[in-house]
Length: 177
Image 1: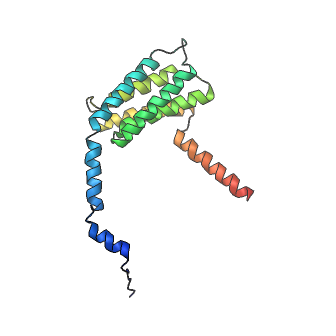
Image 2 (image 1 turned 120 degrees about the vertical axis):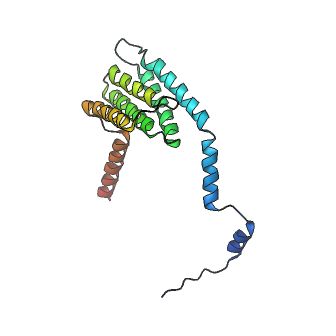
Image 3 (image 1 turned 60 degrees about the horizontal axis):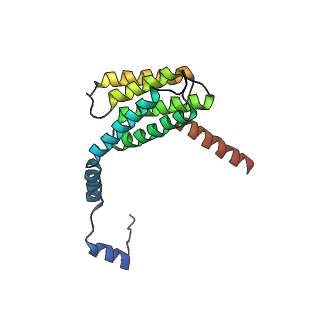
């Protein structure tokens, strides 16, 4: 049997006297604070979706978005991903990540496919806060259809590409050593 001794230090004694908040209480308070910002976040998501709609349904060229529009789609998408992830809108998060993946893939390959981007926006609008909740099986089907668009184009998820690039760079650095 091993006994562990925790020596009394001046710091441990001071911490014991301060009467601070426990970790659990601090986490609960942080959750309450975050929840108090949900309405504001939902409004930003709705505003971002409206801005996306203005871009997506009005391409600068007859059948293509300009580089600036593609960049704006990615910027607004990133903002929605951040808020959807923070406030646990999982389906909206996945649909928006898929939009970003398709947009990034089209941008990288210098291809155009307005229809794929339209479909993603419509899916995001259906999953946005404040809309009627879809049954879970419909959400799953919707997200699987968006995944088919990714597969059709042969694009990776941005996070997969970043992980692959980081792995390749680490492997190359290790081989060089």
